[in-house]
Length: 360
Image (cartoon, rainbow, N blue to C red; front, side):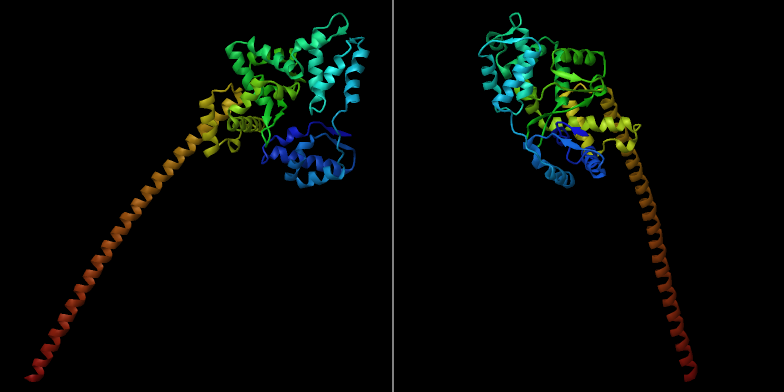
């Protein structure tokens, strides 16, 4: 069985990217081989976007099962069951309060997970209380407060790193809704400062890592933390450039850094303009990718200029040659005309002489 959870993350990739197309092609191929069961978990509001991959869309359509939002009994079991297993008591009224807060929310479980952890930190003995929950500020406020608390404890340089990191871990989809991204850890943990910050965010349960990749712990963070939403809204075009740069630089590095993978023309100009304007904290591979792109552009520009100069010299020589030919043709024409004129005069003189002899 192959399970693909949160398939909407693949839809957040550039629609024209080879990575996105290959991902869906591989899923179709897996199912076509008939060697296992394919289970896809995808948010219902993203189904329409599958039209860009017709074969995969038909595959989903044949096995579509719409899973509704968790009902009130489902939510109660999700709260009470784990608490009972952990030997915790829930103050009367707390479960009702939590259910009312998250019922109907598409990200109910991540929201519950976070706020219950914050409530557990404020427990009285083995009892989770209403007062403890109230102290968190509520479902969304609990997530926002946790993130904001971490942010405010950082230095200015660390805050800038956090901003760049979060903007790599969350990308707006085609309609502007935030979707979390899983990125290679090596692409964001580029030095000790980045690595230490990542560990701090993992401890705060804001991001998670398996050692190889990094992602935000809950997609709800992007919806609940106003500061992150503000960052996402500040520079939508810049986010697209950053995302494309990250993918392109990683591909370039993995392939052995060939010139064929470097930026050229308008894409390079836009990336450099964004870098100079936003001053982001770029990983070494991305910095080196842009430098290599600029160096290649300079080499190609010099080659183009030399070619233009060579063509100009060739054209100049050609024009000189054509001018010489024209002069020779003119001289030849004049000489021919003079020769013809002389011949005509000679003929006339001969005829006149013949006439005089006949008259004599």
